[in-house]
Image (cartoon, rainbow, N blue to C red; front, side, top):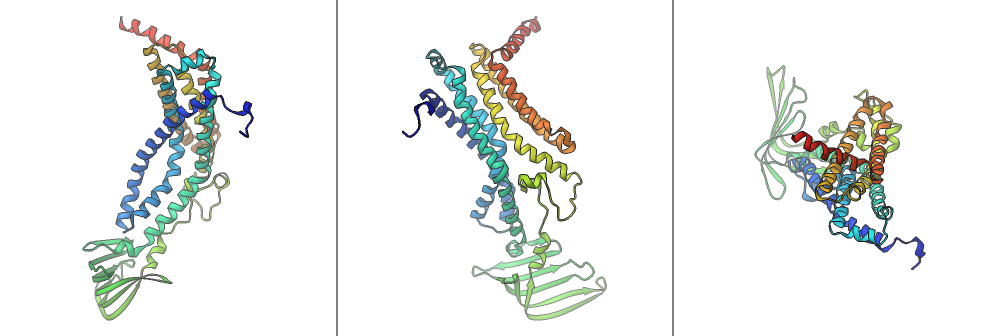
Length: 386
C-alpha cells in the first residue's frame, strides 16, 4: 500500500521467489543438520567426560553453527535454486511464463534477489557471527577443561584431569560427599606426592575450586624414592585452580579473528607458525570472496535450466554438468585459499574463481557455450562406439 506500484515485483516474480525460497531453506537446513551433527560429536566426548549438562552441549553446538553456515549457505542455495527452477520447468510453468511474455531476464530477477539475500546472510556469518561464536566457544571449552572438579567426578576410575594429576574416587554420594579419595600429584617427578583420604567434598570458593579431604594421609617420596615421609591429617584443602591455569591459551586462531584482526594482526607473543600472517591474510580475503559464489551459483542454475535444448536426455546431462561444475568451482576455491596462504600474491584467485564461474554461466545464458559442449559430447559418442 505504501510502495509505488512500479517499485513492486511482478506477481510472476513473487511467485518464482516463493517457489525458490522453500527448496533453498530445505537444502540449507538438511546440509546444516548433517554437518552440524558430525561436528557436534567432537564436543560430545568433551561434555560427557567433563560431567557437563545437556544444555551446555546444545549451547556449544549452536556456537559452531555460524562457521558451518559460511560453507553450507552457498552450496545449499545452489542446490535449492537448481531444484526450484527444475521443478518449475518440469511442471511446464516456465514454458507458460515465457509464452505470456515473461523473459529470461525477468526470471533471473527473483533468482538474483534470493542470491543476494543468501549472500548477505553469508557475509553476516563470515564477518561477525563466526568469529564471535568461535571466541565464545573457545572460552567455554577452556572453562570446561579448566573445571578440574567436574572432570574428577567419575566413580571407580583413575582420572587425569590435568597433566601431572591423577585422581581416584571410590564413591560419590547423592548429597555430593565423596568416600575414598586418592590424589597423586606428579608435577615434580623427583618428589611425587600422594594424598589418601577416607572422605571429602568438592567446594567452589571465591578463590576457585577446592577439594576438601578429611581423615587421611600425605605421602611424599624424597631422594628418587629412597625416602618416604607420611603425614596424617584430619582436614586438608587441595587447590584445584593451580592446574586449571595451565590450560589457558591467549593466541587467537584464524577462525576466532574479525576481519580487521586478520588483515592487521596483533600478537602478544610471537606466533608458533611463521606463516601465520599469510594465513590470516588469505583467510580475510576468503571471507570477502566466499559469499560471491552465491551470485555465480545463481547464474549457473539459471543457465542449466533455461539454456539449450529441452530434450530429456540433453536436459538431464545439462543439470549434471552444472552440478559438477559448481562442485569443481568450489573445490578449486578452497585450493586457491591454501595457495594464497603460501603465496599472498595469488590472493586475487579467491575473487577470480567465483567471478569467472559466474561469467561463464552468463555467457551460457546467451545460449552458446553449454549447448555447443553438449553437441560435441553427443557427436563424439557414436564415433567412440564405432
